[in-house]
Length: 486
Image (tube, rainbow, N blue to C red; front, side, top):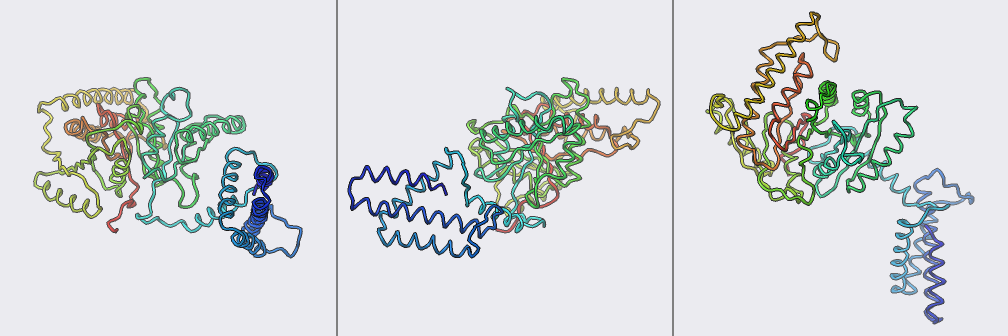
């Protein structure tokens, strides 16, 4: 318990006081406190079965150390309660100072064993069963590796760390920051250790509660697949994967990104993890940039309430606390609008969430109507059609049947491709019509269609996010994360 510091303070204090009537209880207090500290350390190490604890006295038992520590404290209060309080306060300050500034020598800290055992018991008590929505916490797996270069040579994009904090209520929670290092493990082991230290230092600097992990793998796809299967323990496994949207893939002609991006999303779906993809990461506000306006949710599919919960967590942050939530629901027919609006309002009331509900009828969307939002969307739609037509032309000119990443033959249904493009066109135009000035837009993540090339899916996604400055694309994992019960 770092008793040497107590002796030094005791001797110096006695010399300075110069009064025997004061020196006697002062010396007694500090020596009794030292004996209590030694007994407390022995009590903790023996009770917690620390492997390094090997007392020479074979009759030792943790109860003897506990009785000894208790007697020391009792005697201190019997001598003088005022001296006791001062001595304990001063000893606590010294202990804290040595813990922060001092260098550990041959001593250990009995409390560390207690923390370790407490963590183990807490982990076992969580079990491996599905967590009740009332006890659900987001544990984001933040994918630090960007689609491009990091700014200022930092190990993680600063705005990713800011967003990870936005997913915690009052800063409580754990995030796992992961980066993948391409190469052979035996050759890159030391480099990975150094990179892990740098990442851990950076997330501490950004005041993110979490841990840093570096994984060495031949490529990003294999590395991420290993991470998603093995990261975490029991119910402390990450449940949401957070990553940046690859906006640079077309601009920098990074042809490998579509297959990698689609592979990561499919891995998350297979592993039953939630997904949050951030579009417009550079514009994401830090804790000092206050936002005004609305947080707009386009609730396309039921996702267990993850999108609703994220919007509520954003409101707990200073940067978004002045915003209001708008929930947009998509109805097929005009006649369904009022009933759908009433149902959603009742659902939000039961969840104790406040939001303005707006029902949008997609069938009333007219492609020929005028408006800047539709013109912007139509321009992007036409460009996507041309690129997909060129891609299909290249496939047909090759003569052989192309293969998907899973080895299956690629069968392209051009009518289905057109349908996907048109759906994204309508949704993008709706977002631009209602939410062009929103602080942030949340929209459901469409899963990659089967038998469609990864390139086509990137075209669909690009059309969805076109001209929207800041967007969160969210996919739940079909488990409720909010509850109707108090």
